[in-house]
Amino acid sequence: MNLKPIKPKRISDQVFEQIRELIYKGSFKPGQQILPERELALSMAVSRTSVRNAINKLVTMGLLEHRQGQGTFVSSPDNRPGNPLAAAMAADEATFGDLLEVRMGLECNAAMLAAQRATDTDLKAIEKSLEEMEDDLATTDKIGTGADAAFHMAITFSTKNPVFIHLMHNFYDFLFLGIKKNLTHMYMDREALEDVIGHHRAIYDAIQRRSSQDAFEAMRKHIAYVQEYFSTR
Image (cartoon, rainbow, N blue to C red; front, side, top):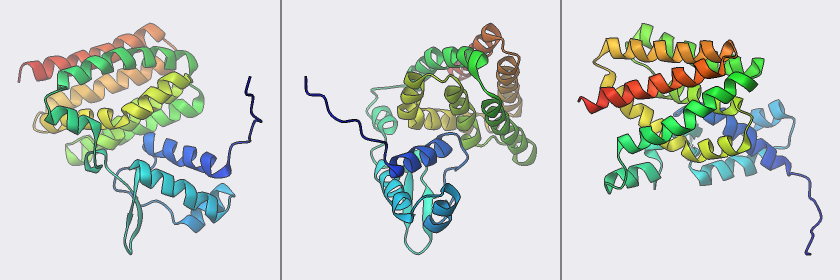
């Protein structure tokens, strides 16, 4: 047996994971400039080298981008080179319906588990994203893709299931672009957008009440609504 010594996790890896989670949860939104290295290092009580290594890794992954003379920004999934969803859609290997079927399987179970396991911090993250969606609709007659994606990612983090979280990390671009497609087609349909907000409120309320079955059903109803909406258009 080739056993190897256990090495403590590097500081830069911990910085990487924390910033990545902030991106996935929507605390750092697409297009937003992140704090300079110095300020991040001070906030996280680590060296600037650790922050720089973490940021470089996130840039390599395509989650962040450096802009000459401006700083470092969160990249948008639809602008990332080699985006797997865009490539699959372009080649007709995957359809929007395929994406919704996968979301149905993953997210209904995630909502059910979130109702059982969400902490107060998780509930605040879900509610914050929901409030951003409601504010977007009230002020712009639209719903922000970032807030919607952050809502679903916050539910995933609430499951406390590392497999779920890993899957959704890798599924994030698909989720973001799928939601963007939803919302783009619904922007001229105020009633549909209000329905979507209502669905999200029902999902959050069920999770907050710790009702696993209601959370599962609320998520199922939401995704089924989107499937039906696009099947008739």
